[in-house]
Length: 219
Image (cartoon, rainbow, N blue to C red; front, side, top):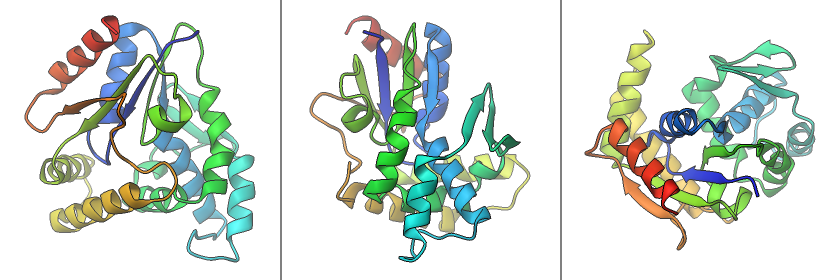
């Protein structure tokens, strides 16, 4: 069976960067599952649809099942258009989190995520990679950090792109998103009994990557 390393964790825990580096070191494919939800968020916004509207829900569900998303290296395409920058906005992230609590939308995107499982292996990051999408993953990691540390990282990331950022607003949004993700009825965000928890609040990214690779090689 094609091996999978599933890396789950809260927003801004660094799981995307870590997963990409682990995949590169091992020569595996990489899946940013959050990007798929963000692409759906961008597509919904372009269509004028909102997850809070009951009237829009059927169209959003249909969109999830037929989402024309492609990953080409570092580029993410929606209907052939590059949306790599658009999906990284705070607005897209917030809507993606709201879309992710709808069971029928999650079902529509589930198979698309599983299709990324290809030889020689896959490193997938998200919030339910180990608990729902790849339950048979060889290694399941729950990567976390304090809300303060994660907010600081997100703040620096946004300012690094030349954009203005409000630290308190970022912190409040992270806390609210954590609560929503942990309390949702479908695939709540939390470490599962067969996952290994790694708190990266006080350790560097190289140590995080090396630890995960060591866990995988000795699993």
